[in-house]
Amino acid sequence: MKVIQTPDGFPGFASTREWVLEGETDAVFAVLRDREQPAIGLLVTEPWDLAPGYEPDLPDEELRRIGVEEATDVQLLVVATIAPASASQGDGADADRDMTIWLNLAAPIAISRRTNQARQVILDRQGWPLRHAVAARN
Image (cartoon, rainbow, N blue to C red; front, side, top):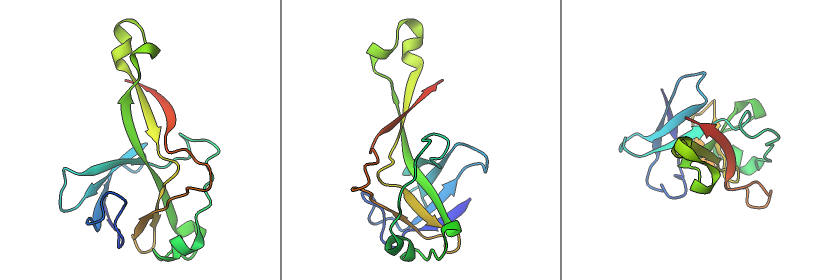
């Protein structure tokens, strides 16, 4: 369990300043949970295995705001959502088990390993999708 500070909040969660990163070290997904309101959480993952070729250009000024001095200081997470696949994509009894994982590659969360401060960086001019589909099956 790691406590993450967000001095500026996250879009949609402006008043939340402390989050807890919960998850096993080798797990694909973790939960970034509001420390004061544990019912609020974001499913997150490191994007590298689920979005091959993802190489966002994180602006230096954004990284400096959270105390990043070197590239190795950054842990990068993306928000994931899980939703049932549309009925037209499945058939028979297995149709209700098909799920799609969506990754928000347009707004990764950069965390300083040194300061444990984080920012969600909006990459609106880099062409990364807001919803990148990753197929999954229960």
